[in-house]
Image (cartoon, rainbow, N blue to C red; front, side, top):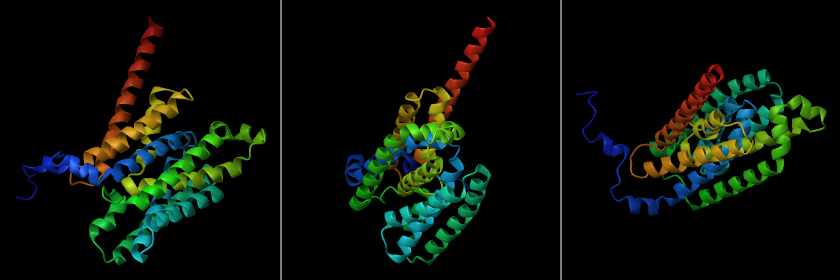
Length: 291
């Protein structure tokens, strides 16, 4: 009967049969998830501070179209993803100095990038799994060259963030005062957008374009629920990102589903737990003040 869930549906979600052999074959995916989880958690702090969660989605759509074009024309998928993400990131950084302008540009780029990517995939004659892995993530998509690309991107972004940490934090928290103090806020914004584009391009390879927010926004949002300390928040965000990315990948190794449901579910549960703890703390504080 249509609509009845098969009795063995659970084995398609989690199945640890022959898990050791699968882990040995797909260890690149676990390592890549670790890179993306670490870098995504780190840059996510600035995404939240600069109120740019919407920009992540816009860049991911263009990254998806670049990767889809690379598949169609037989080019390097990571390179295509990076090119698409950088085009969107630079456009947003240059043209979207003000929040209203930025949101308008993102609103234009998102449907264009998604439609262009779907066009490229529709023209691609290969297997449908290869096509839609860019949208929903694909556990077997990371080979040695791609892992090398992701590692290079990750190291570059982490080093750049540590070098720019103080001025970028100042510009993110109070851009008007930062500009008055002589910090080149316009240039810093463009550089940050380029770094964000690189991280989005790396994340699309793991979790897909549609759900990239789960690794670049949710960990930092969860961390901000339980702390505001300038050192604790990045540490928690990185820990949450690693837990979601690596934990989701390890679970996905034994299932037949795309990797994204595992990562997004773990990331969401972390956020719910942190938000619950935050509300309990606020409630205790309120009771303490009234007693």
